[in-house]
Image: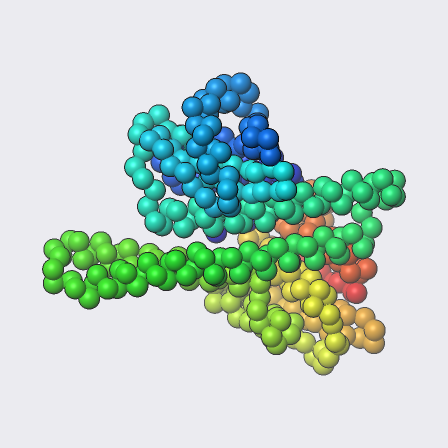
Length: 359
């Protein structure tokens, strides 16, 4: 889902809601969208800076907005759009209202399932932002001048993994099951294909294939959010499967060497190392143009050593830090710090990209 990758880059709740609005406007037949907060008292205010004009435009739909805030993912439709609840805290609900200048058709089942997925993921992200804000406020009061200790980074990454796991479960138990049910209905119709014109059957077959593609994509998203193999068989098996997936999807070959890696790691350490390797491979796919990649994961005495290198285009080290965000390196660096480790990068134009991490 493109939305999930887009909101990972959001630095605030406001930016995340703006990404949500942009995503819905790109996909559905609506022309305007407003992100709102509904307070426990029933008071409605804008998240985005649309001023009084936006408040005036949504005023006729206040009853619909209040009807939608009973649960996450609830959709209330009306003639020229709909309201969707996408997040909640103890005293506030987060809502997006989408409007059109003309009467809009009712949302299809696929569109509703898609909006439900957006709502579940947005709710997790809202919770993350609010928890992070609360933790940072408490930390600043307790330790002025030291706002990013390693223990806090470790805690935040643990919270993120917990929320990813919860979302994977929600997707699997709700959206994925609905999609499988919908696919079965299409198959039942196709079993009676003699009753319908050929053009109708062709459309149903196309719909059935599209649903199957969405099911596969949802399963992949669940796997990305919570790599079950990591919990069942450990880090080495999980990375081996990740490597196989990237080799199938990309134009590079990967050698994964674990030597005699036998160090017993807790699940949080395994998850952080898995996410670091995942981000390095994602970076290679997007930027490197590499043909060969080497990943080594070994334990030397008490240290864990992760070595990555590729034969890609590389980058000028002076430009590297200007592109840290776009290359995902800031997230890797933060994870390494959270694990009390050290990271060294060696790269230059035409000479590939190497990363050495010691923990």
